Length: 315
Image (cartoon, rainbow, N blue to C red):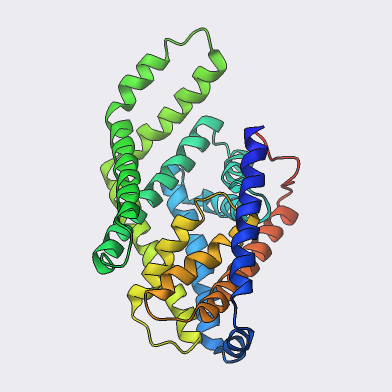
């Protein structure tokens, strides 16, 4: 019941936000902006999105500490997850990618879950750092309560990841005593094994550096879309849009984050004096670009790798 309420609330929020934005749109400015887009920066942005998906798949492979020969399976699972987030509400793609990697490799379910969770926690840590940088740049124009919330998430993600790495052995020994719940015990033990193999310092440093590099490229392709519109904005504008978008898509919304995505771009670009109608046009181009790549790659994987989205939605 709560899950249905969450979905309905997200759909309602997206539709309401989108309706408000469209009612305030200057359609002449909107269509003029779309007509004057330069194609080369868009093509570069598309190439960078493809690269980002590959790098995220590589990072997930390293987090799971499987041989790099398994990279293609993590790439396939990542694309299925992105496609799931685009089609289904409530970030169902996160579940789909766990099911997919369990389906494609010999990775047991517990380790599949723990590797996916660690993978996302790394994102939370870097997003927290980027948000702190954003608050330093735009501190006088952003609600300080936003900073408090993000700092809390950053501290929580960092603390949990460090605690798991330190106490994984003790937790493993404790869970071995759960003889009354053998199936749960098996899943948790496998999950903790995933933490144990990840915590080697060499691997941690590599994946942290890779995560920072991924976000730099992520913001760079957003900056390229700004170049396509002919805007002379600093790289920090792309950082601002990226952080606002990531915070917005954490809210309940319709599939594909429609509505909340547009509002995030409008709020972020307003800090740089970009008209609301232009910001909506920018957000739509960004979404269409991502949806095109995610849709094509995700559909190809589901078709050629025999993964049925409907049948495999649950664990």
